[in-house]
Length: 228
Image: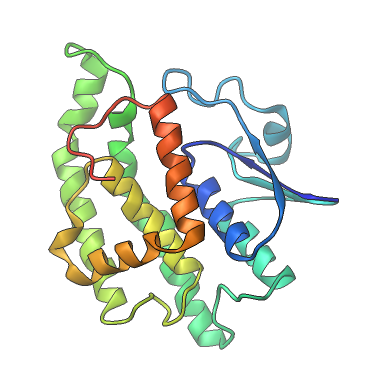
């Protein structure tokens, strides 16, 4: 049975899984769930609701196996299709790499999510949008601190775990969404800016970035100052 991924045009975590599938050269069926900036994911896809208690994409299907959560899916893919590897094989190096992935998904995301209203359509007198925007300076400052921490973790290495890994995919997507939402400039950290450009040169990442841009053209309001 073919692999199947329930995804969405602007879902950061579904796109994370897509990059892994592309890196491993795996054929898969992509099921795009409905999404609009005004209604979000409503009505929610019934299969997603039935198989993910959080009601979110990604949801991944391999025969009789159904998984949710991008990290769980990626770890399964790396176990089932170990070439090319996306985590180090040494246990300590693997644990460090998983922790960087977690840092991206759960720490970098916290301030970033407060910028996501910026792609929603709004009028100049939209009180709800303006109230959300009034909180962004503090969130951009917090996000800049997270970028600094990521730059320290990267150091002078080309990739976060030495070789290309799932951690790089996770951090890249946080940086890319920051760029498309006019977050803090990456140029503050030369190594992080180089990493971002290096990642965009990978075929899997370039295809995914183009797909996100297509989704923005169809679904998103323009964001002043967006750099991606």
